[in-house]
Length: 354
Image (cartoon, rainbow, N blue to C red):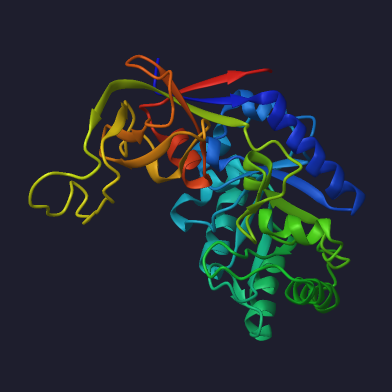
């Protein structure tokens, strides 16, 4: 049933295989980030024998992932959910001592060992102990070492997601240096040095990832051929893995500008439109309640998206012949639109080319 989002599993798998090959040649483990697709089971299955592990920010999604490979919780832990964190993930990213105590209690209660990656903030100002505060880093790492049921498995960083800080050899080099310092201070192996997300892929391709980074958490690059450090496509991966399809419910010629006094629209926005004369306008039956409409990219380049309300997407069909009421319009997606599509109950999820 329309509207829907379709995933080409074969193209997705090819993207993942290419990235896995690049990572493995550099001695880097590649965990596929599945949060944008809510860890849809057939997507996970398509990646199972390509990637080294899976990572997700939601415990509900981790519960859906059936695999013998490691599962990593991306979002820093909620201490009230410590038991589920230990039960559903093998590894989690952590930065707070209170949460570490809760995880230790849960691990002992469940008779499990839980691996911790200590997050270090290299300047993006999201999660992690500030890299300049060596005393706090050592204190937190020592806490992990001392608490029963926990293993200090690695150190990690997140970049570009909040402050837009781009991974570079210099800042990732600080993470490598901190990992080695902790190994010496604590006499621990600390095997994982997790150098970020899709924004580190471009640096890897250009040989700029410093030696010692041995793990990446990659989602958007695999899903959308997107270099998140620059906002541009890499150009050598499939960019059309996902396609949104919606039906046209109306096609009529109308003016290009609204008629009469204007105020805010339904979302409190004041919008304006240029006078382009009469326009063949279509209404696709999909809207902001379904998806991030601003992130829809018409596959037919003759079509222009004019805007959207809760339930309707208005498109300019003036240059695009052949579209009538009942025609299906196809769109590519940005990351934000993909994320909203898979969390929306109003879009059917369809898989092809297994």
